[in-house]
Length: 370
Image (spheres, rainbow, N blue to C red):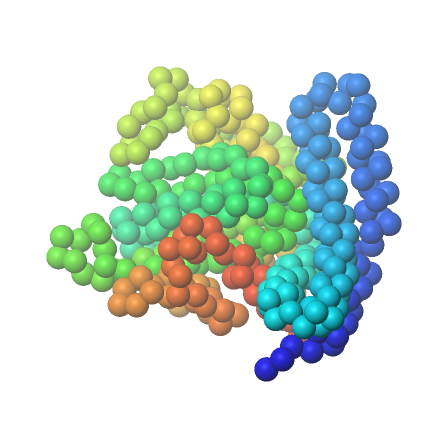
């Protein structure tokens, strides 16, 4: 069936107009100008953390504007390409135009998803915690597989990461891990990944080769910023120090540099051991604790909304996504019904389609609930 390029290009322009109206390129240019001025300040790097935030925000704002302008140019070029193909009656050029149409559609869809991120903390960087659930050593191994999946996803998108804590299981895998994704909108994007993930496979740890079901919980919270007023009285915090440990429980540090911080009023516990000093681990633990309390405060202020990183049991009955490797290969999201048979690609970080479907599903849930 021949493609009606005229209608398709009109649809592309309409979609881009809608995205542009929400994104507001003029506001984006003003933000770039302001951030560029901050980045040019001679004393910028006197505060490395603040400097990194400024340069990161500038880079991503420039990228967002360039992506909008590039898509507008690609749509105009597509129109010219189709016109040339018709003039010369060139099937190869027409085929090229069809491929470009498909590519632009996909790029617009990805950009459109970003406009659905309008939550109070959606623009924040993210702190992700993965915990092994039911399933013994297979669950610990699954937790490590999920951690690699998200870190590979970040790497594929050019996002910075920092692993804050890894608690290794005795035989293999991880009891838990906490890491940061350093990119604007990382929380809004990854918050749809929060919940229980389920793995079905032939266990590599079972000498009888039996099929095993295991679970892991994913928690996503927004990273605390200096402007947030999350003050925690010293009396509300209990701090324990211990030696960092590696795989199999082996000690990897000769000093008590690891930190376990407990928030006594809520019972929230944060452990950090990946920094070199106790002071650095304590600072990282406090930052993550503040992030979790920030999200808790948001949930309390809007109790009608379901908690974005709520109580995740990591067991039967509450899973949001299944990864089946045996007897067939399939990853399926149980909320959106989105699925893929390319399990190897998913575990290598190709999860954009699942995230996009999750964001669209969440927005629809919000609309239906209004």
